[in-house]
Length: 263
Image (cartoon, rainbow, N blue to C red):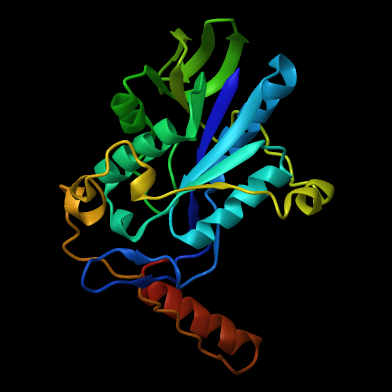
């Protein structure tokens, strides 16, 4: 079974810069990491490979430095990796991102199963996975919290429906998005990290896509436009209270009472 995991590089914290003109994040301006939800998707894929055989490849979309998370995936036992990167892809909303990913996946190869994390910590839309499946014209199951069985032509999964659990059998090729409690992600292996630190990854730009029309990508193809976006302001105030225990206690109490935290 050929499995593909879609992963994304996201900011490590909320201290990021925003482009005042386009309203998109400046992803070069802060430390980044692999999207935490994608770790569960990758671990799910690796366990399927270990139990049933096959391969696990990873693909990401982003600026050139996003390639670093592919090497993190290699250190966790992923086989091959690819990055979709081009300035013309910048500023994409959910729809344009999903289309770009679908085009990149077509260029990467044919896969039986595509696994995505439920959502990302920088967007939280949980829409990219289902939209990619729609553009690839393959079936999709979201909110998967357990893999029940893997067959030659299908996979059986449990889907969390909030009020109940629905068991579904879905034929290949297909896409699933998994919840963060489906498995416990492994740590990257230092030995694999050293062994794969010079591993080649495939790079897909606009010229490598089946559809080479730049108007179908990035800001040009994004029907939703950001009107205003800004990093959260910091209102942290520190105050030193002096006095004996009774005075300090009374001061703290009065301040909490003024804020209506205590009565």
